[in-house]
Image (cartoon, rainbow, N blue to C red; front, top):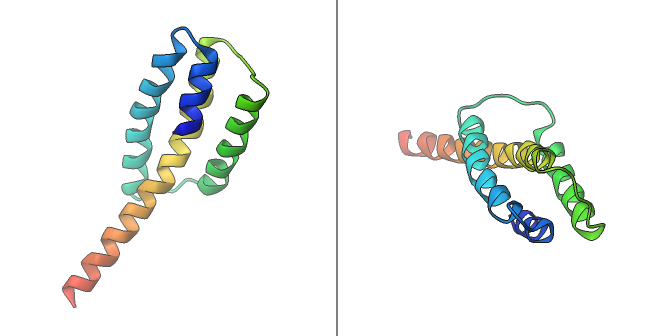
Length: 101
């Protein structure tokens, strides 16, 4: 989340609002998809890759078109929050089993 904010600030103009708004929207979708027990292979690897990509985008001050920026941010954000949704589903399922015993 911090990396998206820094990258958006570097890009300036509409990216300052567009990327964080996209982040929140896609975060919700990814979290819901993960909590719904959908299976996506290598979701955790892609989430880790997102951290590395954002570090490179920020340190190298790489700029793309507005649409490309949103696609990059949305793609990686979905997988990052998908893994968090899976953790929530697993944790709540574990608690339900503990309560039933």
